Amino acid sequence: MSAEPLSVVPPAPGPDAALAGAASRAGVAAAASVAGAAASAELSLNNIEVIYDHVILVLKGVSLQVPTGRIVALLGANGAGKTTTLKAISNLLRAERGNVTKGTIEYRGKRIDKLSPNQLVKMGVCQVMEGRHCFAHLTVEENLLTGAFTRNGSRGELRTELERVYHYFPRLKQRRTSLAGYTSGGEQQMTAVGRALMARPSMILLDEPSMGLAPQIVEEIFSIVRDLNRKESVSFLLAEQNTMIALRFADYGYILENGRVVMDGAAADLGRNEDVKEFYLGLSTAGRKSFREVKHYRRRKRWLA
Ligand code: ATP
Image (cartoon, rainbow, N blue to C red; front, side, top):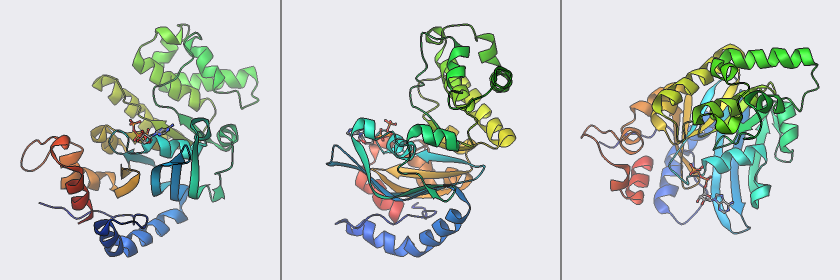
């Protein structure tokens, strides 16, 4: 039942012989696909390593690309390194004593590793953090307006931007005068995405939009993400534990395990892959199986077989 990995990015050299063997088998194909994607990539991470507190190695050579105008999902279990990857891109690691110690990060062909988060926002890259993080004591509309602080727009332009956000999030228009702290989790998530939109980004790094929300609301938020992608040409790098929904809405996906990309491919192909179905969607040809039932080393072996 073992399925062929779609492509496997070679891991960093280490003592694990199984990983090294798999890397050499898949290396040529992976390098070719990565090189091809990099040519048209809006965002490109090349072999990045992240260390917290000078000793905790969390990302171990992550490479990924987000082509212009696409939705790319970054998938993986709790603690796999998804948030760390997004924070490495938006340069938010330093606040947590984290550092990118190897590799490069490029946006539209330019190195961005040394830029501050606000410089990145001006370039068009915005992050929506995990857990929504609205200003609880401000109204929904005031929260949205804070997203436009990097732009020197007139009142009229701000009003136009607000109407654009309300067009995609009609619920926010109804709740515009409510204090954000008193709105629902879904409305706060919408406010957080809407606030990012106010900066007119060309790319949004969206961390766990589904976290703690009811399935119907998650569906609504993902539909809006797709609308923004199609109608406003905003590219998304989407970190999600909810593999099922992320693969339905994304064009392409990367699966992270223990700080390494263990598999990547078109979202539709990943959704059909037996290992992904078994370990991340809770489905297999032999029936439902729990992710926890399978030991980590066995899973890893199967990814790389
Ligand atoms: P989740 O969905 O739970 O946020 P994740 O895939 O986003 O998981 P990260 O939050 O990136 O994973 O964490 C990856 C690893 O890095 C975890 O083992 C975590 O404990 C560790 N880590 C995260 N932040 C720090 C920090 N500030 N200092 C030390 N270790 C950290």
